[in-house]
Image 1 (cartoon, rainbow, N blue to C red):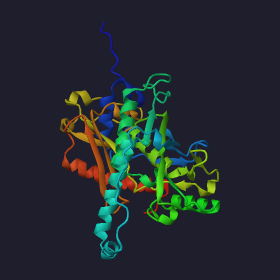
Image 2 (cartoon, helix red, strand yellow):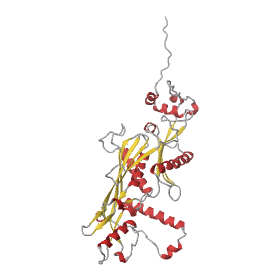
Image 3 (spheres, rainbow, N blue to C red):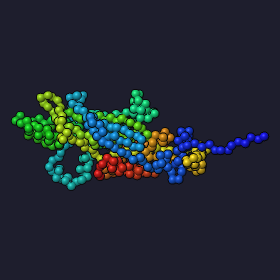
Image 4 (spheres, helix red, strand yellow):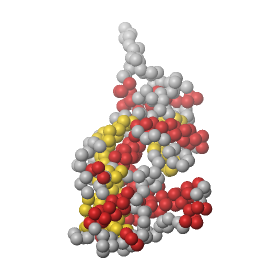
Length: 395
């Protein structure tokens, strides 16, 4: 007697299929019409960021940034570095001011003004790097994901992200060195105490004013620098850690308020005014925005991608023409990052004198060519507008 066998097809829920065969699952969603990702986003669609500033009460500036399920807290702590504590300090000879004739000749020379401004930003960035006045640190060992358990040593990922952020801080020439200098005007012998206070306040408002005025005691004397310690701690991690960390850093720097610092000759040290009303924000040049991407390549054979899902899930596309196709995924989540061997980051700034590509990073393969990079620049420009609105910056 023959035994009948059941021909009922086995089916899995989508989340089970994603765990059993993640590459085929991602390929299935991307070959659907229209192409979509497991999260429902289009390949070129980013997650909307949200930001909350002044989250830490004991920091000079802070912010909490969230992109999807990735959340990071950034706190900026400003500390004083005395000039006498810098070994082998070499003064930075920067040309300040011009003669009256030069000024008159260049009143209408906008290009020359822009050139001098770019030169100053470049020299400021070089001096900050030489003195190590910007000290970022990124922490992943917080239990933010299963791959980063708390209590462990700094992971290679955390060290790499920290170095990339430090490099971008200097490459973007974001900060003004004048904000980090603490100057002292040595008053003439006949100056009254209120005149000394007036000179200290004036030097904070305009560090380059009256640098060689003998009536002010021979010009200002550099006494110390502000050092910015930038700590970023991940609360949760679900892809695009660099984008979230850099966004939180931008928001925290915009939130920084430095107290008025002045040199006390009697105590031979720098003192800070406790009055918050006279604290000054940092001058930031532009708004460099980063957007990361990854490249997902179709399985090498159609049979690897051939799977069928039932029960409210999509059906895999077994068309062999999809084999060899690639997709550029913007703002990857944690699931997608593990399946993309090639990736990169584009940093653009549309808020400076002219639209600029600040930095391009790419690693892991050669599938991305000129057309894909042009598309990434278009997506990055759109992303810049999103970040401008989130941070509340008017162009």
